[in-house]
Length: 214
Image (tube, rainbow, N blue to C red; front, side, top):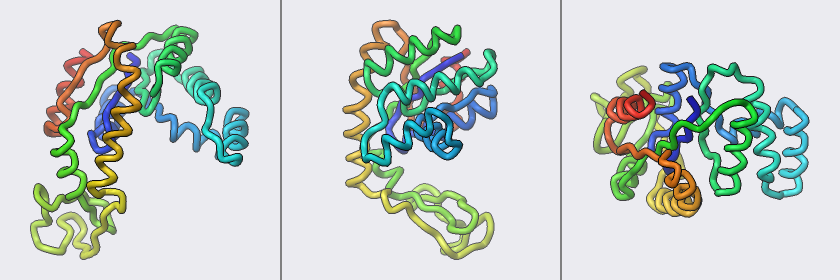
């Protein structure tokens, strides 16, 4: 089972991917993570990518395709893949089809975690975490039981991500729409796109995705 998981930052892609990895033994293929790992390991593709990035240029579709090709080649045939952050253009979507076919794989579903922009702004701008253990909280939906004290470890220090502000969230949403819009028609004409309410509770989103995957 090979799927693409779509959704803007904050929609819960990482959480749902982690649950699929744990529950189904799937493999999350994030192009950003793969790129950093290849550069660190100094693989052939990694060295090519490093040279491009050191020149201040964007990594080409060819290099990204080579990364995905290598990852799929190293995976057991029965292990499903979750593509996160790729493809973002129709050309990349066509390339992914070709790569999957070369490994005897096909794309089963393109699942979009649909969100309400105003609700997402509220969700992201209110979140904060314990600086010691990472327990998550929210200004409106999940405050510590005792003010200023982490429920989990008792720490009194909390932190917020500097980019968790309204302007940044709205910019991310606009970028997501601009980058994702071109590939949706490509998959919709093949009846591969399924939408899930990304604003629902985590377990409800997970159940909806499981219902799609069967």
